[in-house]
Image (cartoon, rainbow, N blue to C red):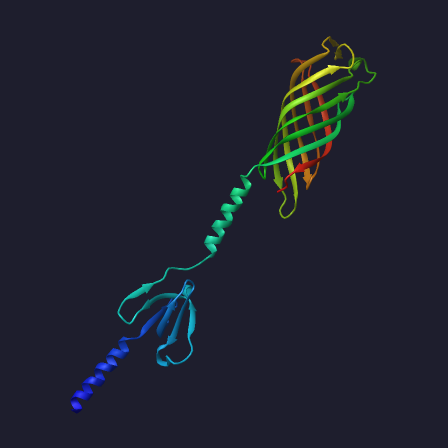
Length: 257
């Protein structure tokens, strides 16, 4: 009878020792436990030697694996939500930058040469293809009034530009401000306030004519306000181009990003 009791005690001890779960941590420590729940982020368990006591939780990212009482093993990968959050942030930023939005610029100022000057008013309508790129169409009216110098006598004229406008913007960090480079290409329609244009010793008896126009410049944009300056070329003939400068200030309408 004593032999039977001894065998039963040994068997029961073996069963008890085998029936526990083992939580192996990433720092190589082990917890003898009774696992109650493996959640999304945490593991809930009771201490094996005090199963009537409180339940404990440990983050899954601290656990390498669990050896269950039935002999199976569950291994956990390195859990971290930061890469996913970073990836999502990068995707949303990329989509935001590639999302076009409408803008219109109303800008007025002065166009001038060494002997002439006059007011200008431009309207540029287009889209920001990204936070750094704008493409639009520019039009408006510009006037040059000649001085009494002999080579510019009678140079009173108006121009009506129709050009494609490209702007590359460079944003400031943590501020709604941009530096930008601007380049406008296209045609401009010149008309004399009289019957022709006298320029650099030649008389152009053409009340209205369309010529090539090229206009690069630099500007600064703060929120909705803009200010810029640059160079403007009226290509009349190979040796008889009109070289002008310009300055203008304006306002930006439409969506801001």
